[in-house]
Image (cartoon, rainbow, N blue to C red; front, side, top):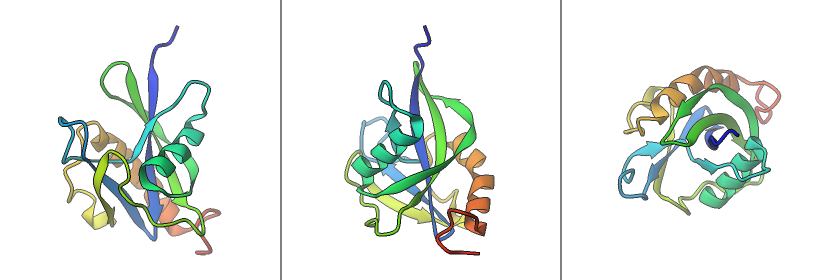
Length: 145
């Protein structure tokens, strides 16, 4: 039986920027930055878990777009999977409601200005090509050509 528990991280993209969230808990992670998200519940699809977690943690309505290839180990038995996501029209802006004390929208030039959690660094690197694609337009780009 596979005992791995998936944690989904959201590469929330808006106006060419990526949302980073600073942890306020637990103490060993406080002050470091991550892609927001959380654990997939039993029977829940990872993309649905991401939408739920972003609503709970940030108070936003989102759509999961595509899974970023790769999987990154966290502490046993957890692994991180990342999905790109976008805010839905009419959604409130994100607020740090749960487990975070600050949020920042980062441009590509600012991406390494925050102290990412060690396990999020490779995930953020893997997200970069998808970020460029999502920012350039396409079917989920809110009217951008």
